[in-house]
Length: 68
Image (cartoon, rainbow, N blue to C red; front, top):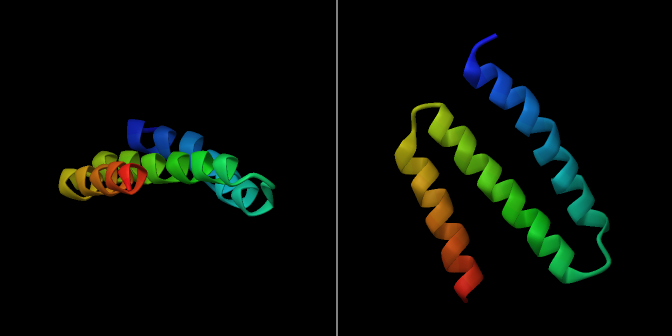
């Protein structure tokens, strides 16, 4: 098993669980934290798939969204 494959099999279920849990959270703050987790996970996937520009853009969008 390669490193990319192991990274995917560890982070993908966590991202899916976080996105499903985000739908059922009663507090908006908890949903926002889970959304941030999903976006960071996507950025990690992009960087692992040798698309660093997309990963950096994903992180910049996350940071910009948090500052607004």
